[in-house]
Length: 388
Ligand SMILES: Cc1cc2nc3c(=O)[nH]c(=O)nc-3n(C[C@H](O)[C@H](O)[C@H](O)COP(=O)(O)OP(=O)(O)OC[C@H]3O[C@@H](n4cnc5c(N)ncnc54)[C@H](O)[C@@H]3O)c2cc1C
Image (cartoon, rainbow, N blue to C red; front, side):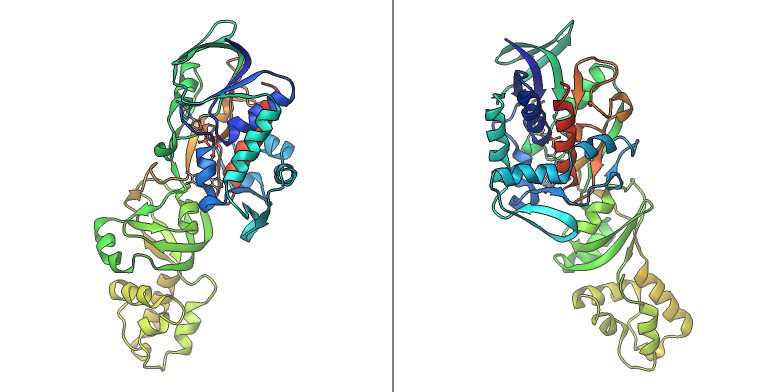
């Protein structure tokens, strides 16, 4: 069998690329080893798919080359995706910070992409196991259901996160096969695990959440942090995990909007205990547990100046050393991937292998939480679709 374009991966990036290449009249076949298309889209955003963000900027992406994503993001904008959503009469809403969600279900986004694929005569082959890829003049892809020849091969196999939804390292292997460098992958947007001591310390407050600022690797994120039975999660923690390196500490400002020192000073004649004073600003269970381990909870009037200053510093800069992360099993994305230095930022084509393209999460471009990762998938897929 022959086709102009073969795309491996029927996820967000692969589907968008197929639609664009198909619209330009190129015969396109998508191959996927899974039995369903767009599995991550279906589970995304708590079932409502946070499909883009109105405030997309290169600063929202992590990459060894922070400029690489700019060209694709400039050519396919959040408004372009929203126009597609509107065309399919999918109702949506903006949550905080420009995050765009379906009002109904993520399934609507998958159906929309499938509809567009049908209109562009894209063929999709599911349950397709790829056994070998070689290249002479053309790409020859051996699969469990026959051999396919194509001029262009687009790798849209995503990262290593959520193997139960079909994720594999196949894209990285294809890159290695064609001599492309890989930036070492790692789980990102992932909960931290506590050391054994911290796990025991905070076991009783599993389920408690509070608003904080988390600093990690020179970046800081404001938002909820959540105590889990294994460690810490919540948006601010997930964001900071993308910048975390093994063995490093994170710093948590527990009262980002309040000056703890002023509160302590204005209560310094009082007989109120530190843990009860902090409970006015933080969840009570947390404040009590935290004081038990970090601050002697005596009446405020018994603290001296130095102790009050130290206590406030600690409230604004609680240092934790995570034992690790929960890993790929619960990581929303994979950081690292195909080195952008190997690809054209205009076309996503590998500089070394004519006709070989990499798009979406398999590339070393990792978005923040909030619709940025889907938008990279759409934008890079759109860019490759114009040329593949
Ligand atoms: C639980 C969860 C929630 C998320 N929520 C959001 C959100 O709300 N907003 C957001 O922006 N991002 C979200 N993300 C991230 C987002 O889903 C990904 O960044 C995005 O799906 C990447 O698109 P992709 O097309 O590159 O890869 P994927 O969507 O992962 O698609 C890759 C495809 O390749 C196929 N494949 C893999 N290996 C092989 C192989 N060996 N042979 C054949 N096919 C193969 C897979 O089956 C899959 O269909 C979420 C991720 C998870 C896990």
